[in-house]
Image (cartoon, rainbow, N blue to C red; front, side, top):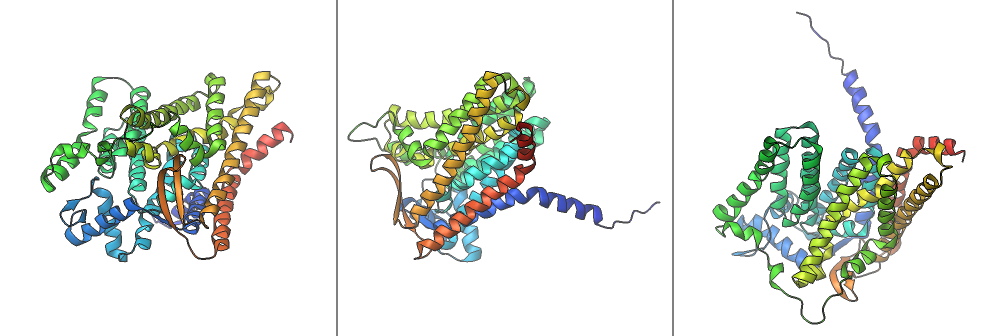
Length: 452
């Protein structure tokens, strides 16, 4: 028998290659951590309730915010937080580390999702945009289960797309299990079923086996839900599908039909929203040219419209005050999908043929693409300026209309705002440098072709 000696050199070389290719993403994660920690912590009534429920898990084994009183949320997020607090002791400042870690994990998953839907550069760009968005940073620095829910939602979506690409029943069932975990973290996990369903239905063959697997996909969720609500807590299976948010109507003046537009303009800004619109326009102008990019844009667009549409229906159709005041939570899963849509402008820029810029339509598409990318950069700078302003504020309001919205109390990193500002700009610089470093070869080639 021949023996093979293992020197370890091939594995070491592979590890170095992996680390080198991962450096831009690691830099973005570092930038996100600097921005998040420098921004401080956020609290409100909901964070206090969820923190108490997490402490209840360690005290009584169940998510009681007061003994005998379950918090009206799925349980898994509180057990995750309780495990962390059991290891590192119980304080709010330590507890906030949990959503911050899940917030960082969302960046990794968004990067991977960008790769499978578009390409590596688009995934990195989307992660960079997401990393500097105040909406995501505030959620990641508040003891809320929303960052956990988004993490598991992106995870089941990513694994589900992998499963569809490889026609793997095992991976598809694994995605179903991750959906069960996400749903038992928070019911908003259902939103990302929309892009997964579109991809599943149109990316593969349509036959009875795929229909059967589509039904089996939900079995883990039904089992998890039944075990928790029917067996463990004895609250009844259908308690999973009820919530206090549906019990409180809007009183007083009727909300504006443009309430969601006002919220998005105030939260993500006109630059970013316009960039997303430009990305869609460029896609429609070059439908055949972009092919896969256009298809991925449509998947993101349908997910975005569904998420925003549900919120509008709950407010304008069902007259619910919680959905009206709280787009910061109801529409949180809109944000990564919109980041992907906007970030695809980079892929579109590289897909254009510089040799055909003499054509008027090609020139128009090129100019629009460059304008869209400039708007994204401007929005990222604006985001850091907003984070700078938090350093001197004791509270933050995500406004819907006027003084109506969802508010947080702000706990600053320290008493010196200048230190927070310096760390925030350092984090932003790290994120931007990582983007330029990852795209330096492409930009040199593009510049040489255009003779810039």
